[in-house]
Length: 166
Image 1: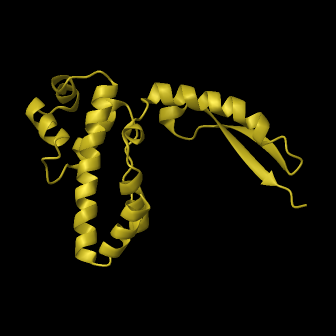
Image 2: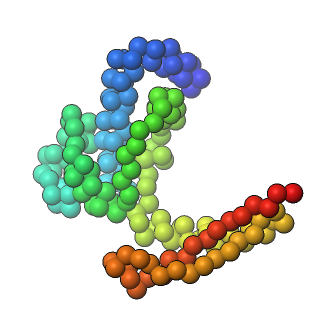
């Protein structure tokens, strides 16, 4: 892996090459993740196509990385079909190089919303007592009514952590 990193750093001195390489990687990674998530959820291409509102042939082309672009609307539909969050962000080339070098099938897996939140609740319940029992930290909690009418019946809990200088 170290050799790959050094090679990419040297090759990325050429801006045009760097942008083209990362574009190709983004397309390949997205195609692989869509395929991986479809398999993870036990869906056929036809079932995924129906959920997304596109043809099975289009799903096949996307999974084969045979596309130039996907609209934000289509990506959002895939996110909804897989019941996951969609994140798109800008990052440094060094992050992209590391992403290329560390890519494996396990990193393409994403739990659906329900499983993710269940795992997150468990981690919060087990981690919070350990995280905030130190003599250097204390926690205050405050229940506040949600301001959004959409969530008017829900309560949001805000946790503030203060580190005490020693």
